Length: 246
Image (cartoon, rainbow, N blue to C red):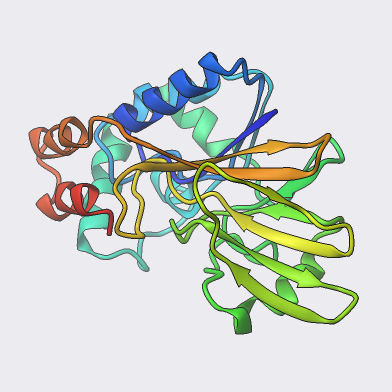
């Protein structure tokens, strides 16, 4: 069983809850789809947790690039820019090196699936609508790619027999069976900053043997994560949106 995580955004409270979930279920393999930092108040602690995961397959996100000084923050809003600047100041040297060394997606995970942050064509692109997705299937090989960046869980299913492309909203806690004549772009949602009006941490498990995925939503100490953001002086909107899931 694999644990698929994305958009942790330095939210230690949420990540701890998710890792407790993984430990109870003896999950041993992890895939992280980028944006480990940014927005949240605990970048070093979150990076330490991720670095301890074995085996773990990672790709970088846009916030990781900016916080590591590898890209400008010109596309960020004010709250995101301020949090990136704060994160840059707080990162320990070893964690900065780890962040700066994260690979660019798409990345193949031992023949089972591909991971990317945004689109497999462009790590900074958002895959939100059907019209944006068709060409993204041409950018990876195999039947399955997990991606993040939008903070909204669900999957695009491409039926290659009928040439039909659909968005599927997944129900938390229920297994979704991948079909042999279809290809999939699957988003596990965000651990650290969900944006679907559900503040619970969002992530997935994948059963490679049975070719099925399951979406999970997990309660965690949202108020504690929000208070931590306010305590370090970040923009209040970053705390507010955690509580509202927006």
